[in-house]
Image (cartoon, rainbow, N blue to C red):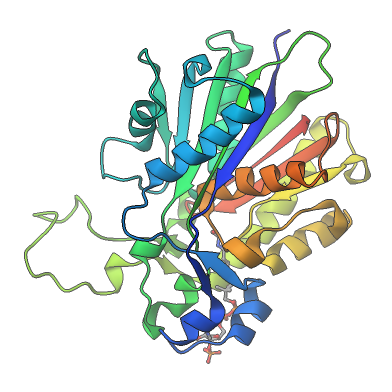
Length: 333
Ligand code: UT7
């Protein structure tokens, strides 16, 4: 039976570092509050000229280099992003152009927020197993910094998010490969939509955009932090339990967990509840904050580069985000 595996990863973050002390100058907040409540020390925010496509391209070039592949070796792109460079078309088409592919290839755009990685991996794994494609580029690329309310009004959200891109190349595993995707599970519950969303601009408005409109709170991300936090811990624990049990593993079998980076305390609680030692994770939240769709590939790429994840290891990924959406994957890396 055909299986797929992660052949290589890559990531890119903008060079502009924004520390908690920088944020203290923009709004009423403190380095102490941000670190205690979230674990974040700094994040990267783009400067004019940097784009979601441009970051995705740089991350992709790293993954191609590591696998000794060229752009033309990619059969399809799955691009995860809240909003890429334009409202439409999606980032997948824009990246296909920038990659310089000599032929047209399919580009899927998915909007599953912080859960983009497990959603993309399920899609890629299914398309490869079923024989439709051999090699798929999964991309998460995100610019948050230009949509944040950087005044005290928006401080509960704006201190948490950063910009960056992470990618991985998934391809058909050679026969008897010790590296393969074991399973992926994804879920959504629209009841949770109200707790994390941006209301405007919306096509429900007639007209969608008006001249001289006041940029009130509805144009910035709205988050009810405590409700999101509680649901994140519950759902991440549940889905990890389900995917392990379904595939006949115990938490103690897991060599490494790559968890979404929304809040260090969420991940500590999840690992505690699952009784998986915290040393079996890698964190990027201190330096990059929450980069939604980009987070898991960024964090996994770093963990691989640092030698924390090795070929053949039993690796789980787990994520939770707006929608609500959540998901997990299990693989022999
Ligand atoms: O990626 C999608 C998933 N996202 C998440 O999973 C995020 C989940 N939520 C969280 O991470 C946490 O709820 C936060 C980090 C957002 C907030 O932490 P909290 O411990 O839940 O704090 P809180 O919202 O209960 O707020 C506590 C206090 C409030 O003041 P009062 O009402 O107690 O006087 C807030 O106004 O902290 C205040 N506050 C801040 N103070 C300084 C909120 N934001 C800030 C800030 N700096 N940036």
